[in-house]
Amino acid sequence: MPENQENNWNLRLYVAGLTPNSLRAIDNSKEICEEHWQGRYELQVIDLYQQPVLAQGEQIIAAGTPIGTRGTTNLIKAATIT
Image 1 (tube, rainbow, N blue to C red):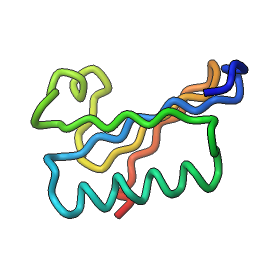
Image 2: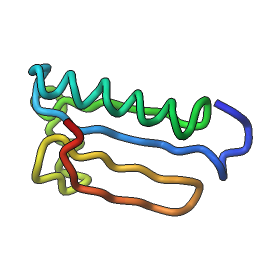
Image 3: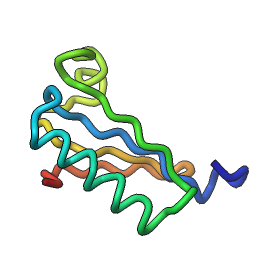
Image 4: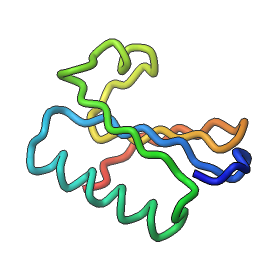
């Protein structure tokens, strides 16, 4: 990742297991990130079944929820990206 943290995106994608829909959401997320922020993002995939405490901290109530921050700006989007 480049040194200028202000232009970097830190993204978390919450999925429910490694189902076909989850895998598609992961692939779609990676494709979108590469298209728009090539080299300026970090994508962390969190399985709600494996790490439910992380979801509680972000108050995640639906799987397929991307959450991201850019610099000091917080972005929260609840969407299905499948």
